[in-house]
Image (cartoon, rainbow, N blue to C red):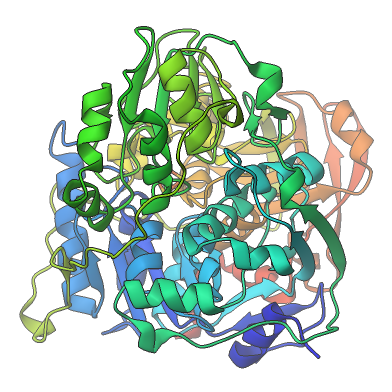
Length: 638
Ligand code: F3S
């Protein structure tokens, strides 16, 4: 008797045993990249010297850096299109939609495995596959036919009963879990949804949950593939991809959480963390400046139809700016066809293109000290582009209701019809380009923004460096390598990008690193939570950071540190964190003793004391670290 997670993992197992906590390696059937992480991933893939991707399907999406103020983003897009054509990869052009929305609609299949260089890749697990977010190098490895190594996860059953009440959304289910378990609560775990309540959720509703499961720190989240899945695939004209899949009756779960859907109320995640959850009724009446509906969390057909049901025939409040970004061109076309777009325009909404947009700080930064309600998945400090703004994460229903009243409003108090026309999808793949049939004739386009890939040197036996920054708990990849319109155009230009590292925590951090010939980072719990961007390891590597000493690490960032040859170390005794100050000199000797044991001693030369530390990594990770990162390691093996 097996749970659904282990059933799929077993079918793809290359190495190891399916026992929680054990290292395993699995075969990846599909890959996806987006442009902000994709350029690096494809440069790394090129460096591996493989002629054609070895996956069943690989797709390159352009959805993040779509502003074209200067040549940089356009250079990246041209590079991505040519690389895709040459190496056997489908290319989804800017304007076709957000990677997760399009992948769910057009490519994801039950029982398959998918790895994507975006932390919200688990969105596709809404239809019963194992979809995992990872750094670009791990995606490049998968495209080269190399298995993906991970720690075999614990499986948490989330048992749903009942039905959501009027005005309550699937966003409230995942916000409830975040309230219960916190942003660290899912580390090393897969959340598998079961119970009668599952049947009452559409694929789009399920996708909101699997998408935002990433905020729990989970490896992924998964729903069974059932009649609801079949209907969804049928509407996408790919019913042939349907396979019924579910957990065996009475199978083992490591933990169980029960949620009665009928008892849920509308919730909001308050600034600046997705787990700072309150009931919307507690926030009612707070003046709102901006409302944004969209992102890979809530931009599907149903999300926008629900928002439109509330907005129909109304006007937005004078104090509110409302923006709407449909998740895919298919969804936008459907809204045009059924007249819903005119509901949005006539109520006063501004329609944005089908991209990530404000979610990644690409435009629509709110005014100073603003209250911004967003249907997105992250509200980390500074992510909106306005440091003093307070970002609240809510459902489309709460967003729409508040846009009309101008204050945070509980939609359960409103009378509106939440029935709408069942989707008959508008199918159009004309902005998805198949790879070339004559790859030898395809020239890769390398504009001036496409710089060479920096590669680390093999690990030194002794690391003797200053602590160039000391950071608190829950530092996100947005803190390390910020996003936003100012920075994102340099995702293929690490020299330039590195000047922005920690810019909101410690301005001119790059200069501090240069003055001290690199350094060591000291951090609290859950270091590197948030997005999968490997730039958060690559840019510090470029600045000469040799090690990160933390109380604990987020999963994807830990893998990225290893991939780029930065030593990740965890305090044995977390209270030693308090004894270290910025600019203390830390010395680690005999680094290769890791081959025998994962324990080391760090000497604080300044304070004349020592601390026991360990590395939460596998034997193969040690080999990768010693080689100076995964690219060197792969080249050495070749
Ligand atoms: Fe894009 Fe935001 Fe999702 S950046 S992929 S919409 S989390």
